[in-house]
Length: 186
Image (spheres, rainbow, N blue to C red):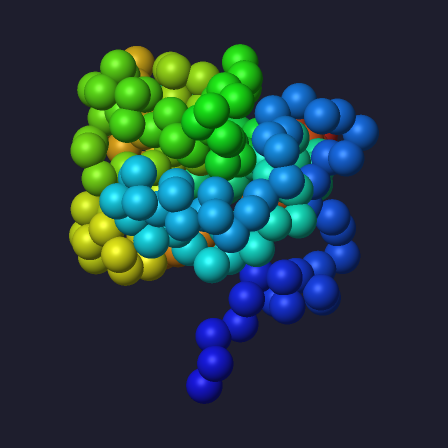
């Protein structure tokens, strides 16, 4: 059985992934050469589902319908979800911009005291969401993990990047659920 790529899988999704109203965090269009160079520099094999997404748009803000991931326990962010407002793309090392790139992961991992076998996807220093290669190795499909730097905690989010994207939802849904629960108990 041939594995389904992210692009093929997404055809049935009702909402777009990217917030195309903003260029914030968007890197130049992704090339095969940039992917090979990124994998060489990071010493990992990046998930096909992530690369399919980055070929569509090389990083940037995600659509409001996909800006949160539900959690099984509270974090410093919220009792029931973590934010996922931006995906770092793959930037050109020669033309570095002020926008963070997946290629900044080694520096950021060291700076924030995170595990070595992680490639960061999103975050702000106090928290990160990353591809976690610690279990399967640097050339196997990584899981996705929440790293709370302030609390020194980790929370596994999904078995792989595709499962992570399938679980993304709107942060507003959590606020609506809390409001509905409060009005039902009144």
